[in-house]
Length: 280
Image (cartoon, rainbow, N blue to C red; front, top):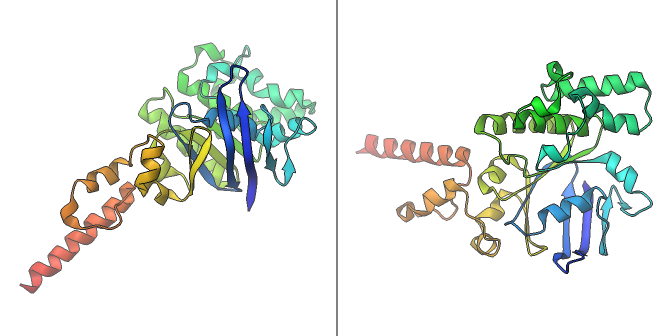
């Protein structure tokens, strides 16, 4: 089911920069969606429209069939949580607990419900034992977890993350995506913005490629096998695809994109070679 519908969305900043130009796309409920594009493609501006921080100048954005406007922007933000690229832009309270409680407190909830939401959110990101810590004493990855917990405490239907793996070490990035996968299994729609094609094909169900504020393509991971889209978006083929592009002798019409695809293909080639040798 389509949860978010963007139709002919345009947005120009006050300095004249045209960030979005009649952009149209859809995002399905319960899916993991990656929005890809080079720096300056309009990814961050688009994300700010998806939860009502920015409102459409032309065109429209709809959430669950409701057009996002000044009349319902606060309702949309309670449904669609946004985690910024830099957690220092989002984590600012005296303690971790206070930071995660900020949203629920401003929703006017009872204290017992606030306590329950904070405890549940911190547990979900593995930060329960840090609730009394000052955020400035945490590592970058821990701050990222706290930022996600602050969004989780709002009980959103959708979580959006702008370049979620930025500045994280490999283990921290793996931990983050394990958290996102678990949230998705529980029914949360997850949207990320990235330029990492390897991450996108391995993690996402749906991919959207944009450049210069326009949608170049939308679909499954197979769209990153389209050379015209890759070139127009200034992206690279996933590394697995690049490897097999260097082996034309295999005569593959469809190149593997993920590690799993490559393992299956190599296994099949080994089995075929084994059968051939046995027949000789």
